[in-house]
Length: 388
Image (cartoon, rainbow, N blue to C red; front, side, top):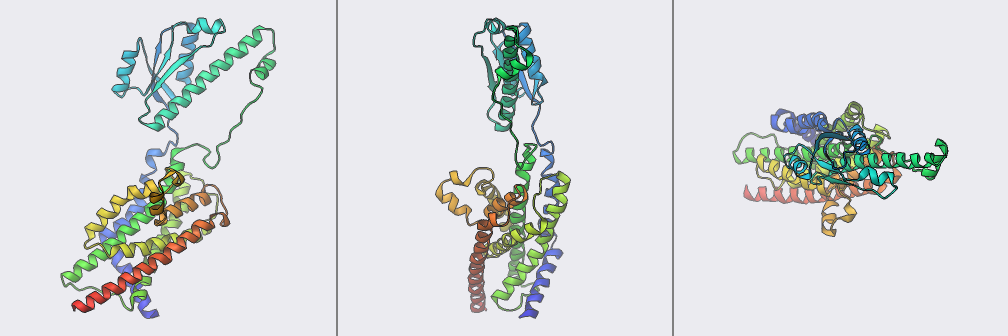
């Protein structure tokens, strides 16, 4: 049995490295995407959102507000339009993402101490642009409002220090935990890397099984896997896992360092946590591969399901707010548990005990898919014997 196990391991590794298509997916794609995918998000934070200003007051104070808006790092004033119609056309043409409207009588209302308003119209079809533009506008308006209040207090004869205290006796000091730059790359890329491991492994295993099935149908020479169903399953499992353990090391020791992603735990801890993740993915891949009749079918089905896996994994939208049936499907995917626990360990510094539920769930999935794969392999073996 041991001899057959090692024979199957080397047979599977030989099949991986002798098949250019599988090698591109299971090695080339993992390495390439690790460097290409984070590139669009390398600046981390979206800045300089284009904005138009419609100033109906055209006063000293309104022009100051326009300059302060343009000085914000989140906003870039691209035009000052005479009316809303011209500003609206810039949004429709894609030259602007929002409009700041300063109403007539703005300075007069401020000087007379009346409540004053400015209007903001921001394109919400791209939520990230909307959030950054609104954040920049709110910060600018609040800064000007604070300056106006301090000036009023000083006009009453108060000192600058007392005016600052009376203007805001309670201040909020905020700290961004686990993502100090509030960056989009730090938020999305670590989760996608784990999903990349799952999807490339599923595609690679499907391609290998499809190739072997095509060769048998065409009666070509194929090196058969040795031993019983369990020995064959374990041989393929160990071969794939040995390759993907190297990928995990590559992610956390190379990719994380290059892109400066936070890693608040040891690489060995990540190895231990992700071991059942890889195991469950390999076994799920072997089970699903039984339904693929060709190489191409595995690529089509797994690539098609990648977006579904992203949406139900829980990092882009909380799984607690999803319908129960979608939550049930997500629990069958190793990526759901691997991303949840893996991000908490790597980025939040969670201890192993704090992600024990996810770790045990992945072990449960491993045994579940092992049982399914073993039953399917025995069934296919009997079908082959009957046909022969």
